[in-house]
Structures are given as C-alpha cells and as structure tokens.
Length: 268
Image 1 (tube, helix red, strand yellow):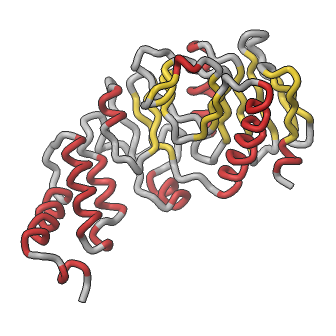
Image 2 (image 1 turned 180 degrees about the horizontal axis):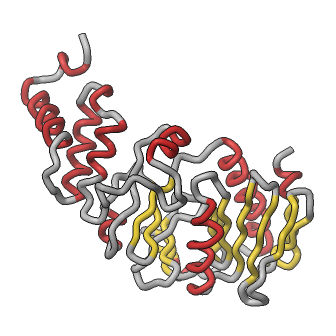
C-alpha cells in the first residue's frame, strides 16, 4: 500500500486538488503556491512531487518568465538540472520585488539583483568544504580578536544597499556592525563577503555581484575559484583593481590586518 492509499479521503482530495493545480497554467499568488506545495509534499506520494512539478510551481511566481530556457550564467535548463539534481527556476522578467524574493519556497535559494531574481543551485562537495573551512577560520579569529563581528554562512539574506531592492545570499558574510543584523538577515553592506565559484555562478560572482558589492559599500570581496585554484580579492577602499592569490599563498585579510589565510592548508 502506498502513501496515498493510507490517507483519509479529505486529505486525498487536497492532494489531488494540488496535482490538478500544479499541472495547469493558471496564475496564482506565490504564497498560495508555496502553501499548496508544502501541503502536497507532506501528504502526497513523493513521485508526484517531481522536477517537472517543482518547475511548474515556480512559474506561478509573478516575476518568473515561463518562456525562459537559459540561466543567468548562460547554461541551459537541462545542463543546470544535470549539475544540481534540482528543478530549474529560469531567468526572470524585470521588476521583481523583495516580496517576490521572500515568497519563494523555503527550499529555493535565490538572489534578487536590480529587479531580477536568479536561482542559486545546489552546491557541490568542494564548494561546501571551502565554505565550512573558511567560515571556521574567520570565526575563530573574530571570537578572539573582533568579538563585535559576526560570521554568517549562506543561506543568509543580505540587503547590501539597505533599501530593500536587492537581496543576495553570499556564501560567507562578515558583519562588524551589529545594528545591521535583524531576524531577516543583514540590512546594509557586510564588511567582507566571500563567494565560492561554481560552474553555474561564474558570471554572477565575477561580474554581477562584484558590481553590486562595490557600489553598496562592501569593504572586501573574495572570489574563491576551486577550478582555477585561485582567489581574486577586491579591496574596494584601497583600489578598484583586484589582487590574485593562488590557493597555496598566504592571503592577507585587509579588514583584519593580523589575519592571513592559506586556502590550500584549509583543504588538507
């Protein structure tokens, strides 16, 4: 007997109603879509909650373009799903808002930049290893030398311009002004941001987010690239030109002059 057969009739009706809903092209408020999806995920046969259904649900958001077939990084829908194993949420139309961002399903990581919403894909092993090791290195330092600072790992919402227009989820944020933190995340620019480059995020990390962080007042931006075994660092207060370090180099941290980090040592 499968899960559907065990459900009371009333709950079965809810499941079937959701399946009919997800298979149609009717427009719907994002919060209603999320609620229906959560209800079905709780009660339905897991086979009903497929990639295709997740994709269909995502299209209900008012800012998602159902005709889009490519990701911001130039990858196709199929390429992304093969990389991530998760449903693809496409590029979006203009004029998305913070409300659209906060109404996305909880399982969906995304960045809202200049009115466009971009899906963040499931990270791979090296990505997560670097996030954990770098965050730990910074956290150990601030606990002793800069206890007013907080080290946050994604998913963690950052509104870098403090105006509510842009919301991003850096891999690591170091925030040394406690007044910027609230229950939703960070309102204002972190002092330091680290992004770990993935195949699908290369353009986003090197270009789109670089411009956003520079304009919003981030002091230091690290782009850690496992494929190149290189870290690119922008110290916006000092110079607009980046500095490049191999993973084997000792990297000085500008906002913490006494701290250096060797990425290769973290991976040993």
